[in-house]
Amino acid sequence: MGRSRTVRKRTARARWNIWSALLLVVALAAAACAPQSVNTTAGTNTTATVDTSASLGDTLNIATWPNYHDPETIKRFTAETGVNVNISVFGSTEEMEALLRAGNSGMDIVVPTHYAVPGWIADGLIEPLDYAKMGNPDLSGWNPLFIDQPFDPGNRYSIPKNWGTTGIIYSPAVGDPVTSWSEFFDRAKGDLSGRAVIVDHQISTIGSAAVAMGYDLNTTDPDQLAKIEAMLVELKPHLWAITSDVQPAIRNGDSWVSMAWTGDGVQVVRDNPDFVYVIPDDGGELWVDNWTVAAHAPHRDAAYAFLEFILRPENSAADTAFILFPHANPAVLPFLPADVANNPVIYPDQEAISRMTLSSAEAYNSEARAEMWARVKSSS
Image 1: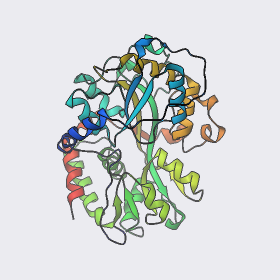
Image 2: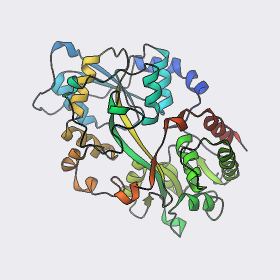
Image 3: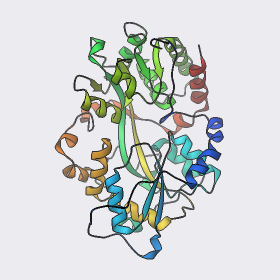
Image 4: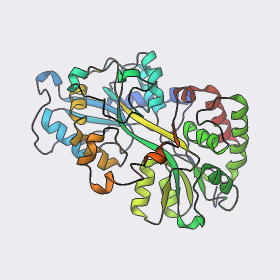
């Protein structure tokens, strides 16, 4: 791609096949024993409503995504409860899953994307949530797109943290706007050859290519996958990069157009107002990350104390304003800064959302898609 015509890769939210994930188990288990710590030695005083009894202990371990939690909100939780929060960062749901499957992960709370939840439930990797320990949150008014969905009927095992879209960022250098996946893939082989980036994540990239070709985002149809593979193999020599760390290339001008998730779009447009993040006209991916409690969590009471704390709208709002991904609870909105609550990139309107499709567990678990994506990335 680009000047070197090589495709660079950095994994973040990337689709790992099971073998590469298993190779990470030993290293990740070691990381879990000594996780990255958030400095929780300071914080503002709040009115304590969390159980601060000795049963909470003084430690909580969370497996989550990079830059996905407001440090000041974490500090307030520690000030309220005396529990120190250790954040272990993972680049994909598959990495989190590999650690849980290895056993004795040391994790208490895990934040997977929705499509992993059914498998985790079936395999006993997460426990049914104890709503009483979380203050009995009422989810009835939450965004119905993410509540009581087939991946977790009744939200017995998971509660939404933040959600988002997979869309397109482009710079003024593209000339004519890129407003659909069909335009994205066509122009990446044409006038934008050498300037396009796709994410290293089979759900998002295969799904977006499927939409561009008129197929369902979650297709596992063999004939359709074969046509998508041929298109992506043809596309690859024209790419600047296959990477889930999309921001550096578009910020420095190496890339002019990129597949991206909501947070990337918000951050780039915030810092570069001439750039545009769009939800494609022909549709695309909708996703939601979720709070779950690991089976055999070593600090179970602390985990539920944290969930009770973070689910309070004012605390969810502080977290949302920091990470710039939308929240599923509308009660959060009054606590958000106006430039966040009213930002159409963060909170798309209903017309835009109506074009999107929630990615599926079937697509996530599809060996055919995983193997096809591996072939695309290894093609010359």
